[in-house]
Image (cartoon, rainbow, N blue to C red; front, side, top):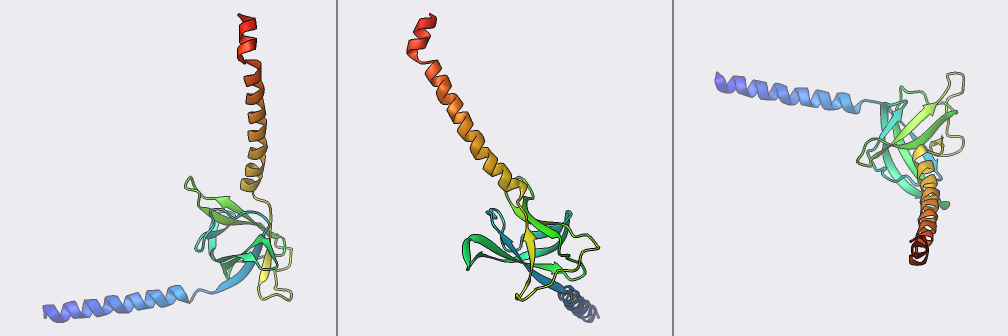
Amino acid sequence: IIGAFTFAVAVAAVLFGLFAARFATDRAWDHYEILFDESVFGLSQGSPVLYNGVSIGRVIEIDLNPEDVRQVLVTVEIDANVPIHTDTRATVRLTGLTGTAAIQLSGGSPEAPLLTAEGRDLARIEAGSSALSRLLEESEGIAVTANDLLNRAGRLLDDENIARVD
């Protein structure tokens, strides 16, 4: 009796696992591509796609654009129940202190038409400049200015000028 009960519980657990796996794979996904003109540092396959902070999909492929290697072509899958409009914009954002990145979608007014492929294999979501890339660009200018300031301070405080002050 104990063996039969254990066997029945094991079979029920396996059947439930198969049911749960089928339910998880039945979810419908739409695929889109995003063309970035900037670095996508920290982004990897499996990185989340967020819409106003809510996870709606994931990154499935990252490649250089074969037509222009200065651009990065990212393929994402997004829950088919989420409407993506023509005015939806994508940016790369950091998700934590570890440097992992996610794609953040924003915009997409209900009045705008839904995004379509228009002669391509996949519909393309427009990419915007991310705050991270703007910060990195501005930090280079700040570093150059700080370096110039330190060089001037070094010339001002050289041995000859310090001797004059004494």
